Every structure is written in structure tokens, then in C-alpha cells.
Amino acid sequence: MHPTTAGEVSESTDSVIDMVSVDAPFLRACRGEPHDRVPVWFMRQAGRSLPEYKAIRGTGSIITAIRTPDLATEITLQPVRRYGTDAAILYSDIVTPIEAIGFGVDVAPGIGPVVEKPFRSASDLERIRPLDPEADTPYVLETVRNLVRELGDVPLIGFAGAPFTVASYLVEGRPSRTYENTKRLMYTDPELWFALLDRLADLALASLHSQVANGASAVQLFDSWAGALSPSDYVRYVQPASQKVLEGIASTGVPRIHFGVNTGELLTHMRDAGADVMGIDWRVDLDDARKRLGDRTPLQGNLDPTAVLAGADVAIERTRDVLRRADGHRGHIFNLGHGVLPDTDPEVLEQVVAVVHAEGKVR
Ligand code: CP3
Image (tube, rainbow, N blue to C red; front, top):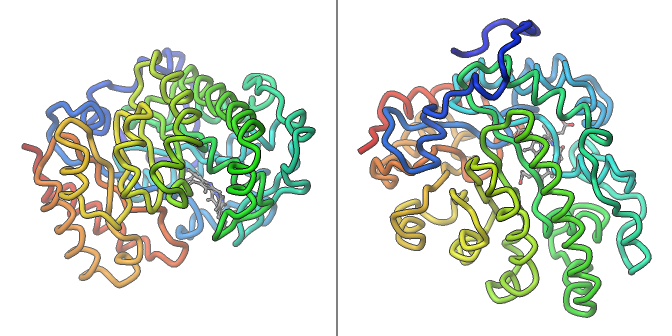
């Protein structure tokens, strides 16, 4: 069942977790089990590409929208309703936990996370206390519970920012191209670096556990900017903290997806951090990613988000190419190689979903 009515919140008394089928194609693909259609969802499927989002989002900070469960619930449902995607992704942000413990971060429209007082020295560690999800982010958990009720058998993906990517915002103070302050800290004061990443791993882990406890049936760890690192630096400075998160959530049994941009050279290391599914950006063809990761790792991806901007004909041709390279493998979840771009025409994405569902064949 797909949610159909905007804003309607049913009063089901069933256990939230029982309502999501473990046999949903998305979850079966995450486990590499046989299923009957190629599942598809899109990173950033909610948001600025959708007129219905702009109509209800308001003009304040995204943090305000995230703190408003009825709004966050509706925004999460909008793309599922429009596209018929096989999974929903919680409307929240990677900085939600760190904002909730009072670090002083906002998300500026058109820019991204901006930090009032960047992390620069050991005294800043005290500004990162442990997250108590029930007390600090009750609005996230209410949204998750609402969603699980509304989504029926469509799984909800919870998520967190990986320690490196969140650290990059805290240290740089804003989005960066070079990550120079982050890397300087990493190279010059590894002790402080590891202490910072350890605290961020604990935040991510606490947040993910609470999302799963309230009904999320898969999680994605976003290490969006890890591609800034060489493989050896990734293994030495970042992998241990991401491993703490991924292994810490393993006991819940939900699939763990691990994603980053420009991470072609890091794929095996990111998988070895403890991922069940690897997200692949568009810079590595899926058949090549399959060779790098072997037959047993489900892959998620990887249509170039700009191909969707080039109109329906190009988008469909490229969609078919992704399906061809995935070769009907049971472990394939169709997605873009990164998030939906704001100028995307939703009608083109609708056609992409239709092609994946009509033409994708699982061996
Ligand atoms: O559909 C979804 O995926 C919605 C949930 C979601 C958001 N952010 C909402 C959002 C998710 C999964 C994220 C994760 C996130 N946030 C990441 C990892 C994913 C990725 O794209 O690599 C990162 C790096 C962030 C930090 C962040 N937040 C950035 C870089 C931006 C973009 C700034 C801009 O406006 O261009 C945001 C803002 C943001 N997060 C928006 C949304 C829908 C758009 C701004 C808004 O509506 O106010």
C-alpha cells in the first residue's frame, strides 16, 4: 500500500514494526535475496525539486521543519506518493543530532550546514555531549513513528551523518571544497581528531538506534565527503569511527547502507567498515563497482543526477544503461549517484521510476 491522502494520520494501534513487511523488495534487495522488481528510491527525493514541498515547507530554517513532526512526516511522504518509490527516507539532516545537543549549527538555504563557533581545539570537545534521543530529539522519533504508521509496507530508511562528514562541517564551519582545516587537525593532532570522531560516532549510533527502535527498517550512513581522502588516510583516520557506528548498529539486524561521493577508490574500505549495502556514485560504472566489491555486496545507485536534468529521453536512456550494468543482480537498488538536484523536473523522475519498475528484471 502506498500512502495516498495528504496529511491524513491514521490511528492504528498495531505495533509499528510489525506493519513493515520484511519481504519488501527494497529490503530483500538489501539482503541479496530474490524478489520480483528492482526497487528504487532517490537520495534527496524530498525537497526543493517538488512544488508540493515548496508549498508547505515555509521559509524558516530546515531545522524548524525537522522539529515539526506533522510537517516532516508529510514532506517524507510526498515523494513516495508522487513517484511510488520502494522506500522512504526520513526528512531530517545529518546535523540534526549535533544541533540538538546545542553545538550551534544551522542549515542555511542554498549553502548547507553553518557553524557559529567551529571546532578548533581540545576545549571544544566539551561542547559535544552524548545524545539522549528521547530527550534531545523527541520530534525525530515522533516523525519516525508517524511515518511507519502511514507508510504501510513501504520501508522507512533512517540515517545519520558519518563521523568524518559531520566533523568536516564542525571544523570548517561551513561547506568546503578542500577540507583544509579538517585535514590539518587530522594530521597535526591525531589524538584530538580521534576523540572528536569517537564522540561523533557515539552521536550517530545513538541516533540510529533510536530511529530503528521506533520503526526504521534500514539505515544509511552518509559519508558524503569521505572521497576527499586517500585510501590510506581513510583507513587510518576515518574507518575506525565509521566501523564503530556500523558495527554498533549491526545487532538490530536492519540493513546498513554506506554511501559517499567520489569514493570509487574507497569502496572496499567502506564496505569493510561494516556495510551490508554500498552506495555507488556515478563516477564508477555499476559493472565495475561489482568487480571491485565482488558478488556478495548489494549495490545502490547510480544514475548521474545531471542526466535527469537533460530531459526524459536522456534520463531514460541512462536509466536503461544502469539497469544493463546491474545485470539483474539480486543485490541492486536503483538510485541516483547522489541527491536529486533542485532543478530536477519531477515528471522526468516519475518516468525513471516507471522504467525501472517496468524494465528492471531480477535474475
Ligand atoms: O529526501 C531526502 O533525502 C531528505 C532528507 C535529507 C536532507 N538532508 C534534507 C535536506 C537527507 C538524507 C539529508 C542528508 C544530508 N544533509 C547530507 C548527506 C546527503 C548528501 O547529499 O550527501 C548532507 C551532506 C547534508 C548537509 C546539507 N543539508 C546540505 C549540503 C544541504 C544543502 C544546502 C542547500 O540548500 O543547497 C542541506 C539542506 C537540506 N537538507 C535540504 C533538504 C531537503 C534543502 C534545504 C531546505 O529545504 O531548506
